[in-house]
Picture 1 (cartoon, helix red, strand yellow):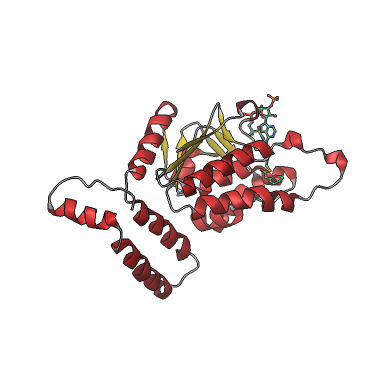
Picture 2 (spheres, protein in one colour; picture 1 turned 60 degrees about the horizontal axis):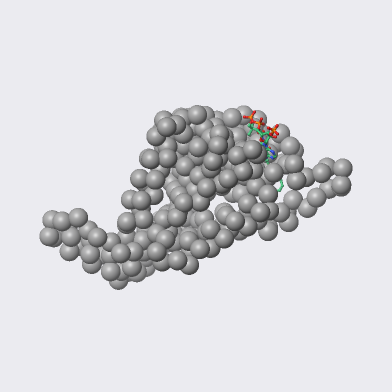
Length: 247
Ligand code: LHQ
């Protein structure tokens, strides 16, 4: 399933309508066994610039931004992470604020060479949200995480890849094809096993090696019962390409 953020005149900033549409997309991805991978991208020259600030009127008193996170952004990040299918993000242009962190919350993030990541929050007096304060230090360490969040300077895609913040960078004109090819490859993969890989890797940062070994045992037990495991082994022994059905 491809989900394309489509408010290019606002660099795909989120308003309520866009939130509800994206949520509906991920809910469908969760429920429909025919959907075996999700590709998230944007139209125009931006990927997503987070909250639509033109929706906000500072003269109307202090808003409850926590409510906005609780209602929209946190459920979206949780949904992307919990989806037992791979989510690929094709960052077609600037990704700012919550838009940057949603891109980083996806399982495989591929950026166009011209894309930039901006932790824009501190420009507004805010704190990185949508998982930013967790994802950044986990991936790139405290020094880089703090500088990005405190200074809110754009980080170019190449550096983001070198630092291990994203998977890779491709030339702008190659992004649609490359990201689609990664998503299609995953969609043709052993979906049960791929979902379990996500679970295991997400659990790792909070686990000891000992606990993680136990988890791997349990997940492998589950994976070993999948039809795709049987197919993978049969295909290997027959020296042919496997045909996975996602079950
Ligand atoms: C926008 C936006 C935008 C409205 C571009 N809103 N119009 C969560 C929970 C609750 C509340 C608060 O926040 C959050 C989390 C957040 O996401 S807070 C962070 C929100 N995002 C930002 O602070 C980024 C705002 N955008 C920018 O700083 C710039 O647009 C960047 C640096 C991303 C790109 O700059 P340029 O390439 O120079 O483009 P531009 O600024 O000219 O943008 C093009 C148009 O898009 C422009 O409209 P206009 O009518 O002048 O053509 C912008 O106003 C509009 N736009 N982002 N978030």
